[in-house]
Image 1 (cartoon, rainbow, N blue to C red):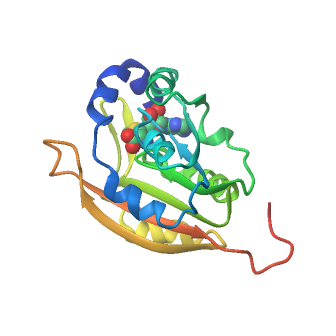
Image 2 (tube, rainbow, N blue to C red):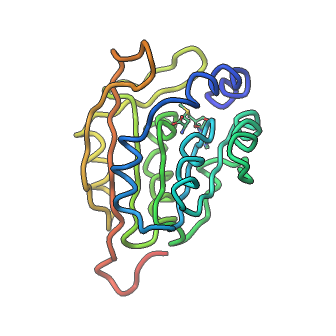
Length: 202
Ligand SMILES: C[S@@+](CC[C@H](N)C(=O)[O-])C[C@H]1O[C@@H](n2cnc3c(N)ncnc32)[C@H](O)[C@@H]1O
């Protein structure tokens, strides 16, 4: 359901988000990604962050499930943005960093473990993964979108069930968009660590 929302409201969503100042979270993430490394922007929306990462010298791939957001993000970034879903992800140990800003929040909670394991698989050991969700404990449908809200405890529980991940930090912040300061976000930085087993899952 959420994807149709973005197809129908692409222009207004683009306008509301393309100039949001995400530099604080971007900098927190980038300090863990080697200079010039390969970053995936998963559920890139406007392409705002993909463009910022390219501007800082990173090699960037980006995708979104919404055809209309892909069109706008490609025009904004000049990158070949792919139209695909998290479910389609097949990368294996490929990225130094994965940026999932406000995108996993549309995955139903029961589907998160399967999707999150695809993110882990796509990261190189040592790679860094940024996630953000709306802060809270609800599972809710609002105006044509599904939201899986997250608390620190719930995120830690999700991650604990997966092997070879280390929480670097989790923090709560206000929305950076004008007039949204009453909305709070839960963000996390998670590192894929080398597996203890020599027969690592791929
Ligand atoms: C709230 S927007 C966030 C966009 C951007 N990352 C940002 O921070 O501004 C959520 C984005 O995730 C995309 N999305 C939602 N579910 C997805 C899925 N299963 N696979 C890929 N993209 C998805 C939507 O199309 C939308 O562009």
